[in-house]
Image 1: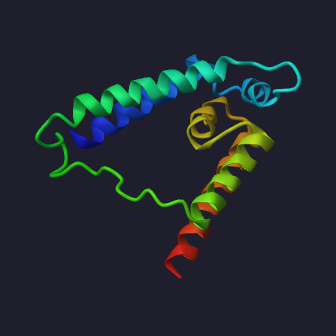
Image 2: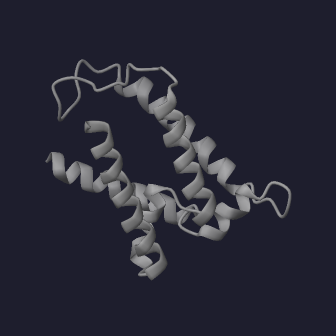
Length: 136
């Protein structure tokens, strides 16, 4: 049941990304072009996501325990360090250069674009290298 729940959540997330236009790199690049033809659609998508997540946390954390786990896994670290800043910079660089972050890139694989496939492969390689560096 846990795997089916995860699959359903992932599919719902992917459909939401596609419906909101976030799998279209031109829309994302248009949002980042604040001095040109700025496309503010992503601002509304992000705002909706923040509101939904905030309400979701309030509702879910009222429960005694999660449905598929023993305990809630809520982040407790709030430090801003070099790893966080470096990771955010790499994320922003990839997002700004191509117009995808991990979720939309994976959702966009259904379009069968070789460039998107290359982006996802590079992203996964970067994650693997990052994990190796952290473990060293």
